[in-house]
Image 1 (spheres, chains in turn purple, blue):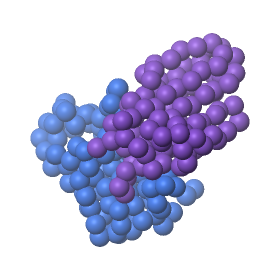
Image 2: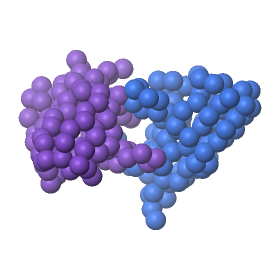
Image 3: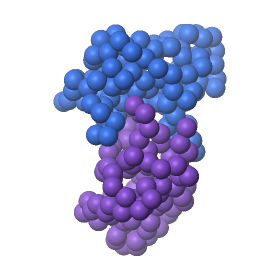
Image 4: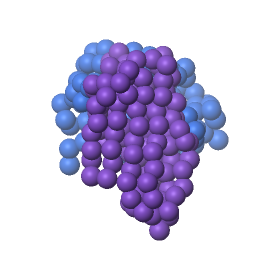
Amino acid sequence: TQLLEQSPQFLSIQEGENLTVYCNSSSVFSSLQWYRQEPGEGPVLLVTVVTGGEVKKLKRLTFQFGDARKDSSLHITAAQPGDTGLYLCAAQGAQKLVFGQGTRLTINP
Amino acid sequence: NAGVTQTPKFQVLKTGQSMTLQCAQDMNHNSMYWYRQDPGMGLRLIYYSASEGTTDKGEVPNGYNVSRLNKREFSLRLESAAPSQTSVYFCASSPLVLYGYTFGSGTRLTVV
């Protein structure tokens, strides 16, 4: 079973600051996905990265897949209170996803 | 609205009671999944069904059973609930893992 480590586990910052969340493993991924989960709801897919070195942007969110396809990062520019939530990375395994433990992000006004 | 529907949303059970969590999707997805979510442990896979007629164990299957009733429905059964099964349960579906999952809104289960 692939083991995904996310860091930090908790992050609380002020509105307008930048932040980066990391997802690491000792295994090579065929693809990696990022989800955001709000309280009382299920996770919602943000992005899928497939190619080593790939960078995808979603408004103020930038996702990067490591060259060796063992790690990924999520960078948020000028964070807003609406970015508050639990961010989960998930690696593609055989017929299923394996999830990291999540980063709980709080953006304070 | 298209999506994954889970019932019930909340449930309290006494130790030893049984219950079935229901999940249905209307997106014609082949694969369906049951995860549990506990604080600090992310989402852990209980069982999955890669296609209608097949089911496989995930990371934490003990104490659970599943039924893929048809392409739309995938139920999770607790035969004899234990306090360790207190958790939030999520059902998800996918046409192909690479395309990502669509999750339901979860069932919050408490076993006392």
